[in-house]
Image (tube, rainbow, N blue to C red; front, side, top):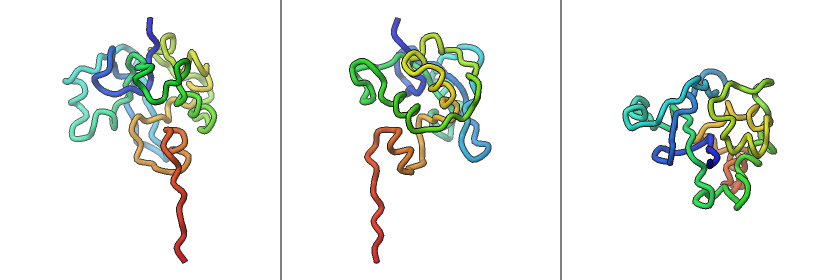
Length: 144
């Protein structure tokens, strides 16, 4: 069976809601669901007027070669998350996809301890977040 991506987009194969993003405190934190909830159009519409990915973290079948983060064997996004971001929890959060999760199978519990702070869409364009997402880091120039 294919691995699941824990940071998926609506419309992907086997798409389901992994959790709800809570905007309390300095960083958004994921509140994990404890049962499977398919990401149907009706469920995703509950995020209106926001985008579904602003409210929900979705999981779906890993797109592998169709995804810019996949190098043919591993998810480079999962690698960057573990290498760059600090852990936000000490114990593994309750997760309904862990047995099938690409990030967990590749990076183990280190990915899980960072997972609650991951948002699929980020409006934070800091150099750290850009580096994690694989976007080029823009050097700020100071004009005298």
